Length: 100
Image (tube, rainbow, N blue to C red; front, side):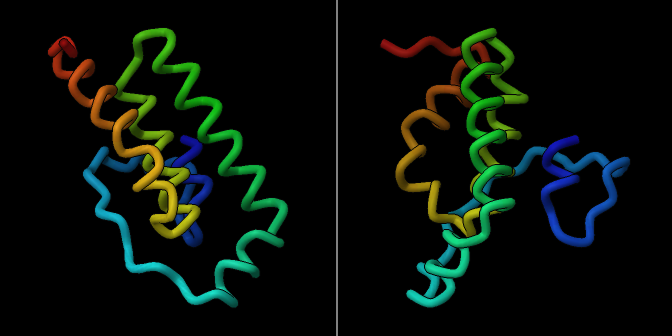
């Protein structure tokens, strides 16, 4: 639900499938500065990351990955490198694997 609400032009009642997100090319400096000044977008990213961590702590890794992907889309891929290890652990846990 959050993911659909966060994306421009998306309708809230339209569910989106979980998919792997490849990090996009780095944005220009001006675009990054404009994105940091957008307080509403920053708040949505913070909420999505908080929900991702809460869901992962509760063992609901599918939703954790969905919220993490929503936050990554809102930041145009800038979260992917920093959250890659955590996303990988959550993906393994969602599939029933354990980390050594």
